[in-house]
Image (tube, rainbow, N blue to C red):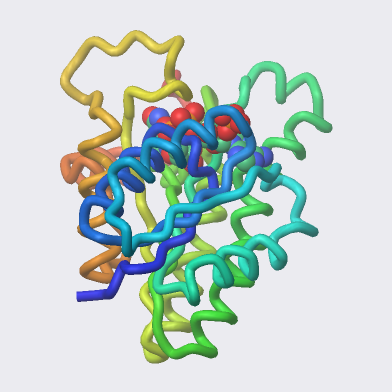
Length: 251
Ligand SMILES: NC(=O)c1ccc[n+]([C@@H]2O[C@H](COP(=O)([O-])OP(=O)(O)OC[C@H]3O[C@@H](n4cnc5c(N)ncnc54)[C@H](OP(=O)(O)O)[C@@H]3O)[C@@H](O)[C@H]2O)c1
């Protein structure tokens, strides 16, 4: 089992990240939270402090994670505050307006910056630090959307696909170095990101359920995890539809 005593969370204001932080703190972890929305971040830190014991450190700072130049400093700050790092969770993301992106290449590149490049930057910096210390867990929330490009959300999907593939390579690099690289692939989650979606049907999950799966995967050092588990089966089918048929579908 991996130790999750000192954890930095990027995108800590996300609903999934907030529930993950709660579960980590409940298990006795110290947590450093990094999020963009200062008010929301402060509320989350205050709530975690109430849940934590006197021997746990709960701290954090607000930052726009699209600004890659800040990443090294943020990791150093987190490490300093917690007295070292056992694990990192990268959770920030946006759900782009696909139609707006199609009409605006700048917007497309901005979305790719947030959902892929900023994640790649954090993964790279964390990988080097954890490799040097010979242990650690690096987890990032990708998505089932990254498994196959679809007309309705291929800007988001391709960014998540890059994260998944980058992590696959990183996992391969760090497997023998004592570092776990954990790719989280949720399906539909009831969170602010999907506030405008119709949530009827059995495929929707609550953030606390996803959080439980994330903590479990990080502890066990799993590779790729579909959450809930049944998305593995759904994506096997979607990935294996022949392209000649797939391109005619309205997915
Ligand atoms: N909800 C789903 O159905 C679903 C499915 C698969 C994967 N995911 C992934 O799960 C992760 C968490 O999403 P969620 O469902 O918990 O939705 P959420 O509550 O909307 O969380 C997304 C978070 O990302 C933050 N963020 C966006 N851009 C940022 C930036 N440049 N710098 C710092 N923070 C930034 C947002 O901060 P602000 O509050 O400042 O905007 C927000 O707190 C995301 O990576 C998402 O892509 C979600």
